[in-house]
Length: 397
Image 1: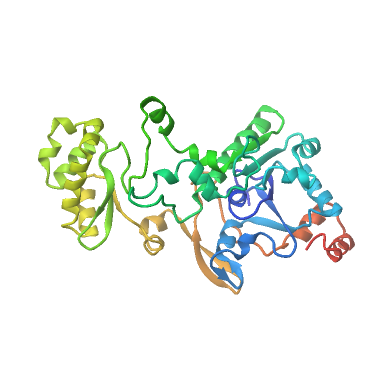
Image 2 (image 1 turned 135 degrees about the horizontal axis):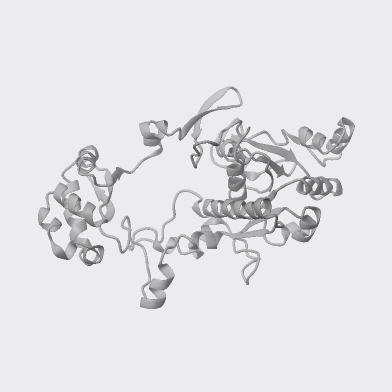
């Protein structure tokens, strides 16, 4: 596939979520991504959540466009193959616990000596330095330490979590950003490669807005606020007559006035105290009450029709059933077809972001374990006899 990242080779030493998601984004835009997996079981993600013929549907999505080589990194021959691949790579992505890459003989000193231009992306719970570096860290722990969990849910309930691996995915996005910055430095500036050190907790913390200065200057501790957006008013989730909810964001000055007229409260629209956000925040409970009084008298569809006509940002809470048939999702090609083993057709998420001239593409779904071992080894100069012998000894699969 010719894409904006064609000619870039990425070597992935990753399992489960963070490193594999980052590598997937490279693969969707044309980079050659070679995923190294342990012979036998491969990436544990292959068995996570819902399975099709014994393989995870998440796997088919997370590893699309990647090449899989099953390689025993604990063997001398396997390590030599990994080094040969790294010597020809632009980016290596890993999410081992700090020190593991060095333990198997692929530390930065080794990799940078093999390839001066190489970018090494390291994703871990707490980063490669600091007193917590050796602690095990999953996305949930990063969400907690990064401050997100403390602000999520209702105040009367324990801190909540989202139903997805948001901490891992945020780390993946930061990893891709860091890798592209380093690649630009190498390709455009002629500089040498470097380490991109990404931690789960910092990736979450980076999205926490003005949390720190609010506390430092004013002693304010932002906490759980249900469906509201703290310090911004009105912006919340409101109940409807048919048992549903609508999300309404009426927090710009002009939109607020249109919203109040739409919900039958022109008196609040004309109230000078409510003309700006700071005044509205002081009377947020009153405003939420007025809006909820109106939404409770309407169905979701009725409320959205009125608000759309008034130019007020509002929306329903989408379930996956809403998503797959939504005309806007379809028009934006965010639901795309895929074919699984057994010629089973399935819907998959589309590609983000949208590039006008060099868009990404899906060429194939996640491959079988070791599906590209022979092709990759042949490119390294291994003969058929070499490959058969490596397979016999369990070095590759």
